[in-house]
Amino acid sequence: MRILLLTHSFNSLSQRLWLELQACGHEVSVELDIADSVAEEAVALWQPDVIVAPFLKRAIPASIWSRYVCLIVHPGIVGDRGPSSLDWAIQEGASEWGVTVLQANAEMDGGDIWAAQTFPMHAAKKSSIYRGEVADAAVRGVLEALVHYPEYVSGSWKPTPLHEFKAPVLGIERPSIKQAQRAIDWQHDDTATVLRKLNAADGCPGVKDVLFGQPCHLFDAHAAMEYRGTAGEVIGRSGDAVLRATTDGAVWIGHVRRIEHDPGFKLPAAVAFAAEAAALPELSFATGEIRYEEHGSAGFLHFDFYNGAMSTDQCLRLRQAYADACKRPTRVLVLMGGGDFWSNGIHLNRIEAADSPADESMRNIEAMDDLALEILSTTDRFTVAVMQGNAGAGGCFLALATDQVWARQSAVLNPHYKNMGNLYGSEYWTYLLPARVGRERAQAIMQNRLPVSAAGAVKEGLIDACFDDDAVAFRARAKRMALELATVPDYGSRLAEKCTRRACDEAKKPLAEYRAAELVEMRRNFYGFDPSYHYARHHFVYKIAHAFTPRHLALHRELASPAGDPPAAAAATQRYPALTGGS
Image (cartoon, rainbow, N blue to C red):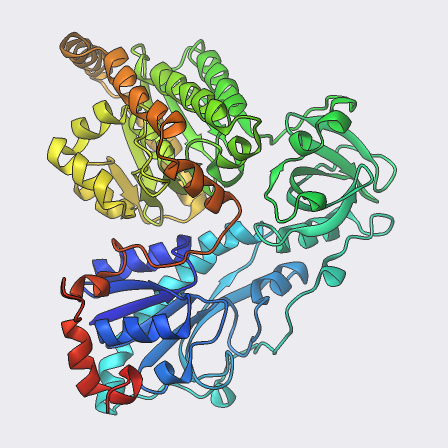
């Protein structure tokens, strides 16, 4: 089928659906929902069989839904209605939630049901559940709905009206959740309650609160039941997180957005409140950003950085942790990344907040390169990157510095830089990517600027393996496979082959030359006459909405002739005159 993906932004869920629909053989074009007239033009050009809307912030106009099947992906169980569906479910501690695929009509979230999927809930951040369970359920639901489409057209199947749908539990219509309903009562709320409120607001908009006497929004919380203090008091810090006492324990606050900087962006709590945090005692954070564990002959290095962003300091600390892990008597070292992201490269928020964003960009990319070089220079054991979640930009190429890359099938990769203001990129990509896929394909990947599914990445040799496991099963599989790699009978000869290959590559062209050439381009991005990178970073950090849909996503825009007369629009005028303005 020909499908138009109409979405507020090309976010993680939209990318996942775009990839899954293409894998099923559908023709998919994307239009960012900027204005009714723009959406109408996109429909006229593409003439889709179905419109799928995975993420909208406003209603589809009647001029579209009255003429096309528009499938809304709603992150709630059947009957649930309103813009804060997932927020309410997390804050109220729902044990089960779901995704409903419904047909757009005049009543918001009140259309006929095409598919409904449910999943068990667990204590986690909204952003994590959205990228995980919600995305998985959305894919299942949309694919199920599309199976029904030919039957719907033929009249042999009809979607179920909301009032006729039978389910053990039906949702209700609820308004947008307000900050007053998210507010934490530090004198009475226990740790579990505080976590639910913070998790329900994570990503956006955060919980409005006061820290060190200053108004701010709180994000990125973790329980710390081993600590006690006066409820509401900030009692310590660990790295960039600060610890705040509850009635029965404490919570680590990882990130904040200070109110006086609004419109602003999130920063690590100890960076946003640097002077205040410096006066706090340093405490232990058992499940902090970087941790190492060992099983038999395999070491596992976890680095769970918020949103996958890696600041200069985080790169330096991870490099040191990697070097320390290499001193251990293991035969395989596994880089686990985090549960939501493996890595997304340099930390754009920290760069934006720096006195000189250009200088901090340079420091950050140099630190990323140093880390990649450390991995590439490891010749006394095998290294593996295990992608539990998504990876993007420099994070993708950091993973390719390892000997093998394994991923969950649900992971989405964005192995390119150009979307960030034509950024050239470093992390030795000019060495690593062609070695994986060939020079011609490497250039195409970098120029196309499109997401790649884990299965697609395996198919073209970008990564080595992917598995359709849930998160727990995937981690268990990675552990098992790492131990198997550490004990293969021909371990010695394999390792010798790895060393020989690296030595041959170095003799042909040293890694230092790749790095130097990349950094020449990066300096031009950071300090040159073209400010595209700085504009793009600023728009990204401040979440400024797109003014148009990028051409590499909007295939329907390519249908327009050079003279400006879109041939598809002419056909659409005959087919849907009221929609396109024809007589």
